[in-house]
Length: 318
Image (cartoon, rainbow, N blue to C red; front, side, top):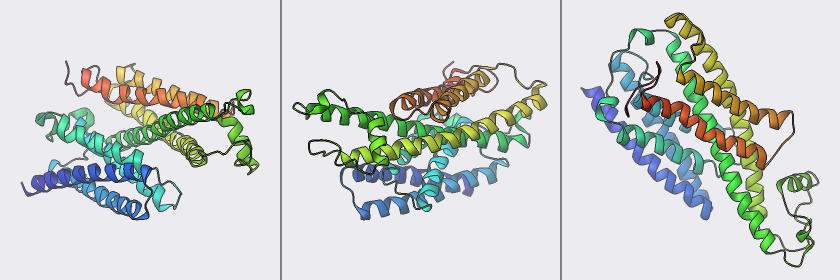
């Protein structure tokens, strides 16, 4: 009973913190302040500790890893968003915008788990025989970590598309009497000039969006890195799931809806990486593919589960 109470307290505190952190990091997008950024970093560490407490206490009183139902998987997804943020910040990278992606991701997944799911789905239950395997931690943790990483990378690509579309619009509107009429600005031009380290003097009129363009380069770069890592984790998760399926059901691959959507997700991000590595695409085209991947991940993770389709579903809507 004490452990359950501690879990509820940790869950409510961590959700409140993610809400406050979201406001802080969105505030830094408008007004950059070292005090706000420092508060956000410390708050994210405290949030990580609180969500870890939720998962650990549930593990103690349930007797198994907290990865067996939709509530636990969403809490783990929120925990993953926090750990991704902390790891990148600890590395000392200049990503002041990162919290504007990871904090709301942690808040929304946490909020859906604690406020959106019925009480019955939030309760811990005994593992069904198929889940009583050492492959549970390997497969489910890799899949959920890949989801969190791919979603962060996809959100960075969506933010990239939003910012670049606004910048291009503003530049075109301010270029009525310039040569840019005949040479529309695009990201490839910018990347080329960045290599020359001469971007600010490229245009024949004062360029006020340099900071935004620099942000788009960071978003594009980190999206590529995050999706590359997430794709590797997803591959490991799918392979370990195939081995586990063979142990549990006697078949490596049965075209279960969850398996099919996992393959679709893998294919989308494989296309993204192929265009980046082999075709040399940068900027908008691969970002559009990554943005599509954002919705595919949610379809794979949540859509199949809530519709109650297949062996991997938790069931809710039908």
